[in-house]
Image (cartoon, rainbow, N blue to C red; front, side, top):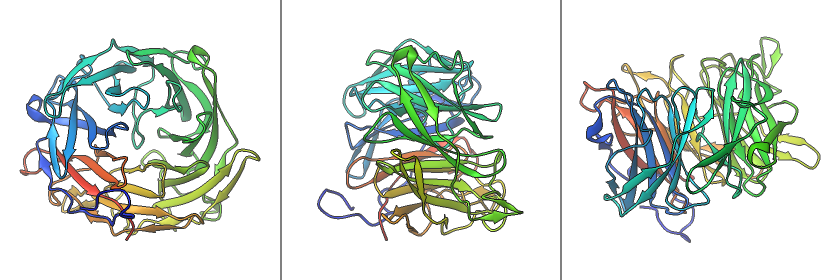
Length: 421
């Protein structure tokens, strides 16, 4: 294992932990939409959520605690207390220990605060009343679902509707969700960015009033917009700066920066520190068709200028047009975890993982892409993960799995450690 502060950056380690099957527990035999979040107060603990797809579509949450390379799981908890639950996401509260902001799709977006008590494997839970976050349906895709505006208690949630990006701002206390912005009415605030997918956002780690958004617009161009947050409670709001093409020098069919998958694609964004970002999108046309395009860039809010790095490609091509989505996570540093599917292998969308490392000059390097879990029986359409907040940079992946060849709706957990190679 590559653990402990003061030992330098760990090398990527895909043998850190064996795959654990059946982590959905005994509450379901078919599941969907697994999502993962790392506890900011406990470097050895995660939460993951999923939906029962056996018919009731209940929404469950489980806690995972690590001791060395041993994983201990809580019992599943019915976090939504509702049937017909769609996409879900848990986000550990950065302000209050043992609290999780739980978002789920149920006639729009609902939210609850989940309180966790007890020791590893013996956790108990309680939930606040359901709060209607938005009349918009919830679909977090590659993002973490909600993004803390520093320690203000406010959270930003990205949406899209009618090909336009939107953001909802909610205020959360230790006992529940208190309010939502009024600027967006019953839905969310439009930020005037065209997109056919949920945009991805991050918040500046040192200034909650600043953020960044990326999206593939309806002209198939990869774009960024700086965000500015202000206000409190129902008066909270957000504004967006002008659109910036992230690959203006790539010309496709006469359209500079075009050629990305829009409705069948995805976007990703991570913060590498204040004013520093790395963005990802799925190329759709030459020269970057069936590639993961990666761009590091800096933004100076004092003069609203972007400094773009060159476009890089991840080290393995996507092999089919039906490949699963990719997910990205980091801790506001230069090491970025990537997990997803590069395409169908033997009829299965195998789960791959690799590390992307950003240099100060905006150059990107990549470890080898390595299949994790059961290579013959995994799907990534519902994969999600997050990383630990210590120097070990441990990733927990929860993936839809078909370990016995008959049940594609089971879940497995895999741990690995990212690092430079």
